[in-house]
Length: 165
Image (cartoon, rainbow, N blue to C red; front, side, top):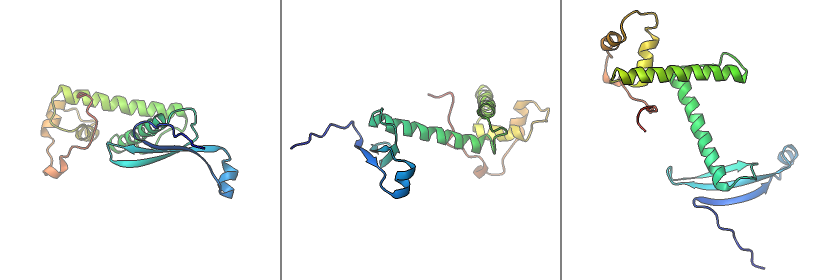
């Protein structure tokens, strides 16, 4: 008997249903899982996704994981650049409020940076502002008088630009 292979979407290498066979894995998760292999043309690499989402297409699985990774990178960037070392609260609402406050701060600083036409990265502007919070110096003077020791200290990180789409 011939089994016809169904045609997979572009870049989906395989889409199979699997079952865990080890004693403990099968005991802890007896349901079927889905294994999707996907070729990412941008990164030139094969990605493998293991999921229990049986109701969506393989392409949607790959897109969801790709978007999730972008969210993870965004939170990593927030923690590194906006100095969120820890969350002050543990509830969902507390975490949301802290993230929204940080994002609003970043957006306001980006707007000031754009309006003042500063030739500095947003990270650099945030650093200058963070050490000058109680200073009553006019912003223009503050940025003009802040000089760096050498060019190695003036670097642009891979930060999102809010004004160029």
